[in-house]
Amino acid sequence: MEKGGTVVPRLGGVVRLGAGNPGALPVAGYAPPCLPENLGDPSFCRDLGIRFPYVGGSMAKGISSAAMAEELGRAGMLGFFGAAGLPLATVSETADRLKASLGEIPFGFNLIHSPHEPELEKELAELYIKKGIRIIEASAFLALTLPLVRYRLHGIRRAADGTIVTPNRIIAKVSREELAAKFFAPAPEKLLRALVANGSITAEQAELAALVPLAQDVTAEADSGGHTDNRPALALFPTINALAAKLQRQYGYSCRLRVGLGGGVSTPASAAAAFSMGAAYVVTGSVNQACVESGTSDTVRTMLAGTRQADVTMAPAADMFEMGVTVQVLKRGTMFPMRAQKLYEIYRACNSLDDIPAAEREKLEKTLFLAPLADIWRDTRAFFEKRDPAQVERAERDPKHLMALVFRWYLGMAAHWAKDGLEPRRMDYQVWCGPAMGAFNEWASGSFLDAPGNRKVEAVALNILYGAAALNRANFLRSQGIELRMDEIAPQPLEIAQIKEYLC
Image 1 (cartoon, rainbow, N blue to C red):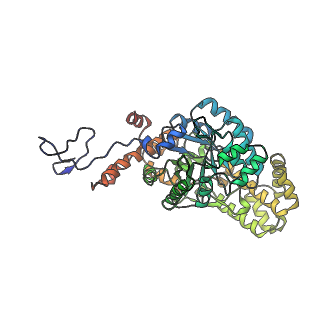
Image 2: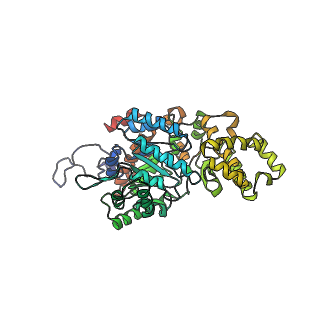
Image 3: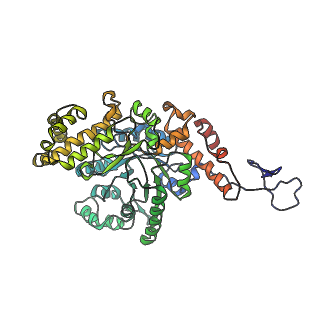
């Protein structure tokens, strides 16, 4: 309201419209309440059984840990356990733990595309079905696969009221429109026929499958850590959101297709921007890795706390090395990106380990592998004899594939060295990270969240959501022509107790 020629805020009260009210002051603008749980699409929270439209995305090798999923779940959000790259036994044990600790509180696991190890993808999908995991995050998929469709359609049926019930839910993470279109569409007929043929579903279930999307929810993955196409969120999200509306009309689904946004979301401002564009929910990743509940090492957490937005780069991916696929990683404090790129250049130039020039090979053995390449192959061979014997058989026929497996040893171990905090290998740490980490550090600088030990996943999440709600109210006033100074409305990090006091 205006008082003495100055616009001043006032909380609460009653506004009486019309003239003739003694002592009344003119009202300059009105900002309705905005609770964090009312951001995004309310149907998303309702369908998943959570309070806030906030998802902790999956990070491989258990970096998005069971503890993280538990903390987010108890806080009314959805957390995914990062199962990619872990033994099936570990994933199984974690499923048992989360079901016991969270009960009916929602949580999820991720299913990452494994083009070179299709059996592993199949075994993981079957494990999720067996354990009753109801939500998965499908990531890095280049095409739809039979295990993915089998998971989604397991238990599909028509309820007594005629609605189609699909117990298993997929939240797909994509950065390309053509992939989003595949997930928003019903399962491909070819894969449905294969599932009917192998007895996974009945003909009647296949008919029902043609009436529901493979994924009702798709996350537009912008410039994120790990697997990413580095797409700008301001261009990517509206495109996929418009695609969802188009396919909704085309297929006439009874459920509404929804689009969330991940990649670059780590501050109240970025979350507010996502919701203002129409995001049904937001997904965070890099910022969660820096939290105390993450499954990485204290060394990595300290490195992430000092990260700036320009301290990331692209490097060859271990799981899709031969295809030239890259992941976004931290470059500050590690030589991994440069060394991984060198391996890919050698792979492209040589047909086998024996083709590597002697001087180059010696350098690799002394600086990257710290052992003869023959010894690395021996260990790699033993690993794949247990995990996927077909890889060994192929390597013995194809020297270039053997070289790829040896080089992938370094890429894979680099992630383990970082996760385990192996100090002698610090310069070889592979730390998946996007520029959002730097943005968070800049925002948290000077606050209690500045110290790595104070970064708890619930505190980070609530601050992002609470700040986004505050900015939403401020933007409502700005849209009424009220001038606001950014230094007065920019949300500052608050302790959990303060935020919960406001939310109750």
